[in-house]
Image 1 (spheres, one colour):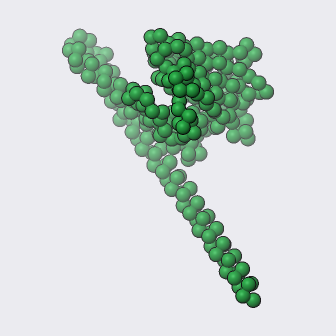
Image 2 (spheres, one colour):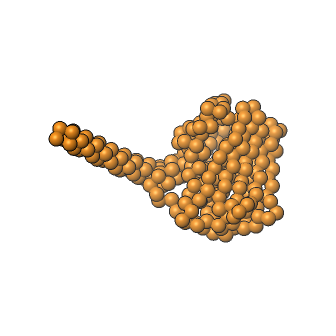
Length: 262
């Protein structure tokens, strides 16, 4: 009788523990949704004044001609740079909050892969330092893809921007291949490389690779968003790196997006 009572008490205790864990999990999910909703709301509200600051600063610079001293023009250019940086942070937070809240849609369309890659290279070309070359190669067998062009573009621009930021000399390149209905995009560089310890957390939010002050500038969200976008498109991302030799980030996504692959 005592053994049965002890077993019954143990089952009750186990049930209560499981119930407490379930309640705690539901509370965590609720708090996560609230946090995501707050970030989405705040990020959206902050974009309007930031765009106004950028717009009016550019207007003053454009219309002032030679009326402003060089020092004042330099100050206004610094305002523009800082506003652009803040807007980038706001956009990153907005993207992340949408993903976490499950409100990030996939806009599927058909486009030429090589055209997109060339466009991304043109977009980041101002970041190319003297002594660095930016190249790309798309396999001849790759024609069109049917997925979210905008999100794939952001993935590539994020990876290229990072590669160029950490590369002082040598090459940054994109290599695109296709196999078994999947497109593989490798963005490689001859930059500073990533310490092995950092590779385990590099795709987490607000994580940055230690380096110079200039290299650390950023939100620490770029690679986290890149990973989320790759997964949203039914794909994945991985990285290989050696300190002092460079890094290669490889994204693999289906050439044709299917919702059930997410």
